[in-house]
Image (cartoon, rainbow, N blue to C red):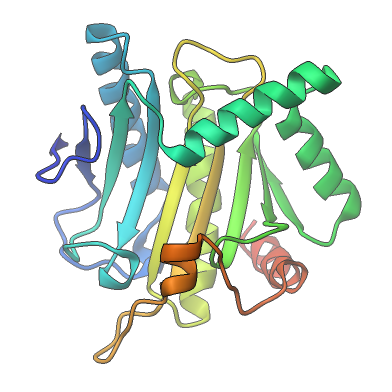
Length: 248
């Protein structure tokens, strides 16, 4: 790990996956992802002990140029700051409002609703539940919720392994349908604690890196904050259920 040359937060850092400059998506093994995420957890713990104001954090990946990455070398990026990003703030505020209005945890009830409906639910891996998004923000979007874990510092080694296995399964499926570029965010609640929040993850494909690749972001995404996708979440979940079943 090292400081980010272009920091997007006060304590921005980069965590390298491998000395190799190029990884296919199937090369992102559970061991590789777990060790990277564990290093980030250690870094965040050290920074938070030094500066308790830096309580908003997220684990992020832009892989290859179509995803917004500036280098092909595989790495993750740490967001760690006294202030949350817009979407982090919205998640935290809405989860707290839901808790106050319904005396329940939004994330728990979301997972139970998706599990009961079945059409978008993919699999349960350890302490994580995987499903496709009801209202996707991008292509082939997959979501996960980490049960009973509010912040990134609450993750134990088994949680990290479950997250890594799920991400590795999703990336393997992305490569099987000929994608090689993706975005990922693992959102954490404020490190001071929040009974209403649960850690959650979003991952989506970007246009495949090829000689004439293009960015799939246009004015709708950048200027209207409206996302367009090319597959129904229920169809996506069906394909991924079969893929997970073969991998488990």
